Image (cartoon, rainbow, N blue to C red; front, side, top):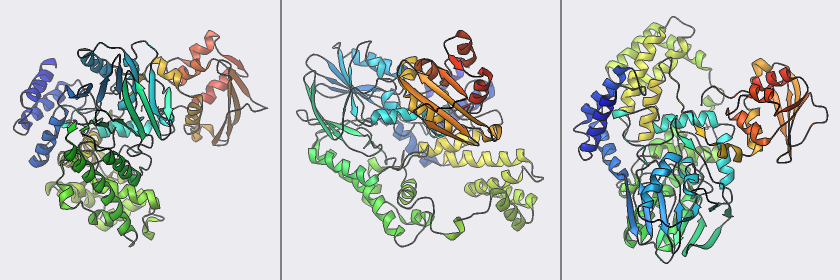
Amino acid sequence: MTILRSIALLMRRLCQGHRVLVHRILMFASVLLALSGCGKPTVEVVDVEVDQQRSLAEHTKEFRKEVIKVTDGVWVAVGYGLANSIMLEGDDGLVIVDTMETLEEAEAVKQAFRKISKKPIKAVIYTHNHADHVFGSSAFSEGNAIDVYAHDTTSFYIDRVVNVIRPIVSVRGARMFGSHLEGAALENAGIGPHLGIGPDSRLDVLRPTKTFSQSLDVTVAGIHMVLEHAPGETNDQIFVWLPEKKVLLPGDNIYKTFPNLYTIRGTLNRDVLAWAQSIDKMRQLKPEFLVPSHTRPLQGEAFISDTLTDYRDGIQFVHDQTVYWMNRGLTPDEIVEKVKLPKHLSKSPFLQEFYGQVDWSVRSVFTGYLGWFDGNSTTLNPLAPLEKAQHIAELAGGSEVLLQKAKMAVSQKQWQWVLELTDHLLVLSQNADVKQGVVKSLRKKSLIALGEMQSNPNSRHYYLTQALELDEDFRAGVPVHPEKHMVHSLPLAGIFQSIAVNLNIEKAGDLRRVVNFTFPDVEQQYSLSLRSGVIEVQNYLQREADITVTMQSSLWKEIVSEMRNPLAAFASGEINIEGDKMDLIAFLGLVKAPDRE
């Protein structure tokens, strides 16, 4: 196993400039890994589009692992993880901007920075809340109390890791970033070489201590900085401007790929006009150095100005043209066919679709303005999946004929049509005489073929991972292991809110229960009122509770994070329960989170 991995790794290192020429060798290594029966599940990739492979391989060069000196006192670590980390050196200390996605990667970056400067780290700056920018932060504190600068909403967005949709976003994120792929199936992650969060990763986060709303002019370790709110990829996005050095750190509002105006892992609506306006703020500064938090730094005032202008124009073009066709009554499917970047923008190396895509962005702009209804009455009350599949099969001449049509589409390499036909066949296989194994085999071929046709790593990984998910014993999602410090810092309000959406109404039935929780160490109280399928969460105690639980808030957080066994905690005497213990255990069993993220 180790030899096979070494072969694949060696070929990658030797052939950075000739990846297409060795593509089949890497494929062979992946197949051998699959046959070995250990390691990550592997899909047998097929060589469908050489041009797509070439462009994707060329993009990988953007993530060569190194620490780059941008100008005096400014260095950026590229290729250590999904995001970059930036070191600013002052008179008597250092400032770190963005801190990687895991403690392991942060430690590697810190060691590289320490070869350049031994000065103490005085502060950390978060450009925004995303995991790849904050979850390695405590590695840079080196056990000291340091200031953490961020927008005043960043802590709120960090806490959304325990929000109501965490399980599904975790699964979709694993698909999008290719967390289960390796070998030829995983070329890069679009904005970085890979997402470093894996089953053995450790995560921690330092809470912001210095926050602001619009702008903050501050000097740390002799470094004069202006921190400016600049919403774009996230609502809390900021940029960092070093006026004396003419250095701009734009966070994730620009990187060398078309922006993720929408991300397929799932996101709140992104205000694309605000994004373009934030770039306008950057243009007015006339920076001579641009250091994004993904991809490599840029130099030269004129070049940076032209790049920023094209980038914001690409964003506004997609917005404006989507709205243009919306107002003329077109549906999202129809608008996607209309909106294509003009020639001068489509040729920009910073607008190639290695992360975001124009068609995804069109759909997001549409739903951001008008919601899910596309305006076509057919979609108001669509047929249920089974009923629709039965009608499709009837049109084809029966489910067996529909299956033959899917097989024919495979032979003709009509991969998207195969995927759509197998949607119906999989539904029918639960109620009709259709062999599910045969359907899954056809679907897997189409997913792999479609994945290999993509130059966008996000869509490529999603197709290939869903091919793996057709195996009965495979489920997407990477379990993570936050440090105890991080778990203790999570707000109780978010934890209790996540409980309500995990109620299993089939098990709960018409049960009615009121459970009060008291946390003396933080002087907070919460109540959960279960009423026939709904849990009301309040931050006060109900007068007539069936059960009252008193414990330290840290213990409760460890229990819900599965760091502590609740039964063992009950037995230890650390929890005081007024009411029936077995009733409480049964109640908590009704609000269990999904088994695997």
